[in-house]
Image (cartoon, rainbow, N blue to C red; front, side):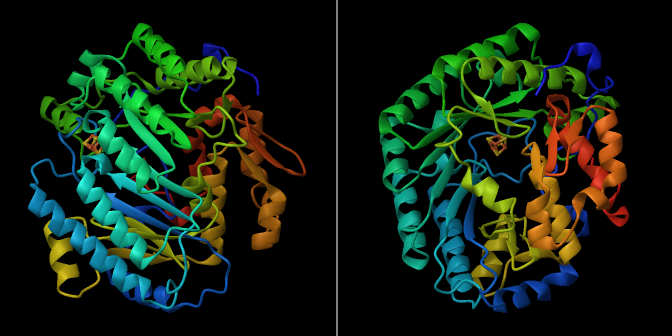
Length: 443
Ligand code: SF4
């Protein structure tokens, strides 16, 4: 892949409110409460399609709400309330683990996301994971991934995280500058990053990932270069870099609304892409490989991200907890997104489903195609075998257009995004949506 000059970057575009990152298809706005019955049916499906199983556990607690955060998080819950929530997630798991689609299966991957999973105490973590394993044993899992906020980690807790079986620890560093962390509402500070990283190295996890955000409020060229340098000094197994987006339910958007501003107080898309490009180039020089539009990995043979790769190729995902997202036997669904309603529903023996959508084979194919495009390459034979589809013929027009813009290249074997295409991959994907799914609510 060739690098590009700044003049070749996609047109300058300010950061306005809305979602940029595409994480699923069809978009969430098409998932409806009236489709809940499809979830019951999905769990009655047989296990004869070879899909792997993953479990996602959502911990919606944080020390502080970051100004760019668009998740439903709670910053005021005490130990009893947290225990009550964790008990409900176990009740939820017990229920689904008995269903025909899940019974007797063992997860190939488990993911603890949030919120802040590392907000849990060492004893809460041990208790939660023991109970989860007793219901669906992890002994055949290839990956147990866990998100950690540096300021919530200490050597003892990190050792517990390792001892419960976590193989991939992802540290939400976001930035190495205390002032920028502060302005953006992050709870941790840079010294905690170094301490947490050192302790994680000492605990010998299979993989340590560092998350960064390009384009936090008040980010500068100079500071971004420092972020790259500090990351290279730590030399984690993988680095994930997100381009800052400002969804509608963020504190930053509320402030924009109050001041009547249409543009977020962060760098425009052109600058954010340049920052990611510069980071990727610096990482490549130091031996990293670019594995998607967001990640660089040191050793692609050793450093897999099973959760992402399995999810993006059609695995079943059982999401536990408030607002979590699941995909079971061709049905997408999301849980209730209010913690009190979630707990009440589960504890009363109900299913905590908020909205759902059964997807057809064509939508399933598009979903996998879009998600695999984010990896930067798509194999035509994979789709021919799995979906009996000739992608080159189906998308002839779009591929020609994007190739002319030098955003991708393709031949008879498949598609490869150029670096420029990879850095704005989420913008390209709308071209492959079914017409009924293109709405202004997505971006
Ligand atoms: S730590 Fe993550 S989940 Fe928690 S408030 Fe910040 S961005 Fe949101």
